[in-house]
Length: 201
Image (tube, rainbow, N blue to C red; front, side, top):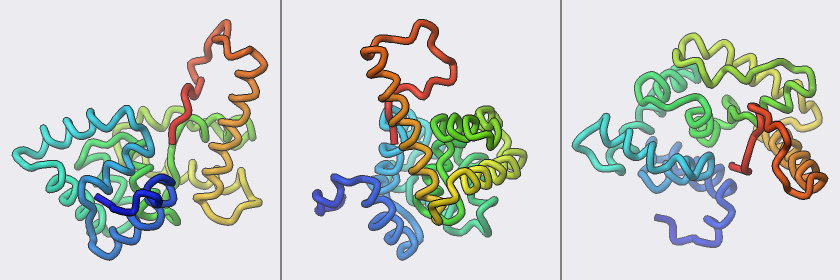
């Protein structure tokens, strides 16, 4: 556990700074660092992720399992192999797998989530809402590359892939707040199946 709690308060900066640097130096992450990424992406999912990891890799504890998983990511040959390791070998779905990989390799990956998908659709850069339903990492990889390319094209004013994702997420969150205020925070008459719901990440 970090003792720099002021740094930990800004979790995203902590992840893309201290955690990423530690991973590339040590070639693995312990449970605290890995689950800090998981909490950042979807805090509600942390207990289910922990249960699944422990059940599928008995009798190890979370530190040992986290180190084994992240070491496998580090040793993978390329970006495609890393996504396959995360999804096929370790059972992560695309939203969480992409979040973990984005923290560790932000030049190669971007977070897949419904907010960015909605913004890409509104900007006429394609419909990627079904990617999360594809279980085969091998089949998913070329479609995920198309998603990354759409993110890059949608936000040309920012050079880094990470900032492009932040822009789309921020645009979605800001527009949701405007809509919520206009409705007085009452529920929509007909909730959309594509609604991003509460703010995460």
